[in-house]
Image (tube, rainbow, N blue to C red; front, top):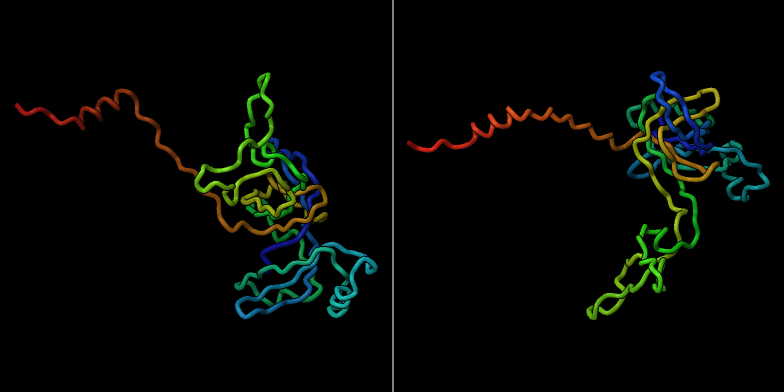
Amino acid sequence: MVKELLGKKIGMTQVFQPSGECVGVTVLEVGPCTFLEKVTYPTKTVVKIGYGSIKEKHVHKPVLGYFKKLNQTPKRFIKEVPVDPTAPQDALTPGKDLTVELFEKDFVVDVTGVSIGRGFQGGMKRHGWSGQPRAHGHTSHRRIGSNGANTDPGRVVRGHRMPGHYGDATITVRNLEVIRTDKDKNLLFLRGAVPGATNGYVVVRKAKVPRRKKIIQEPLAGKKDKKDNAAAKKPQAKK
């Protein structure tokens, strides 16, 4: 079985748990993804899946020929995803639809998407700088100030943070809890935020790195216990 599915971001909303807790969730439409073909490389075997239909007139002829060769309708979003080597390989047949049933409630997933582009931004918004003084008479408030080094090396160090293009980057948010699944509408409700704008394409996979276990601290000892422990550790004077 595949380890990843493709989808798009629908938006955010709130759901109530059976305990009455109100949880902010991101709604994703995951699938149905169509299994296109299996690709074998010298070191690994992957499968190609496609998501979202698109009209033939909007597809380039070489890409359209690829889909006609596979006897499949054109897809808007295509990706090679790894497969679970322990799962039976006969379960994947060309043309089979993969749905949100891959992810169940209480699963932990990683979501990859493209963040919202914000264009050219200054250093304060791009890097979180605090800025210059805002008192009367000061002429530099949101400017970056001096960006050079000392006499040695006497130049701007490579990699120095500067104003520039901000956003529109591939970001992966890890360990998002699956709150609810809607198999009829292929919806996935995740606790927390997902990168990207509404209707942006995302890749959902089972979490690679498990969550860290919470460290349970022992209750602090009372004042009386602390005094007894200190007295026991204090070396006794020789008579």
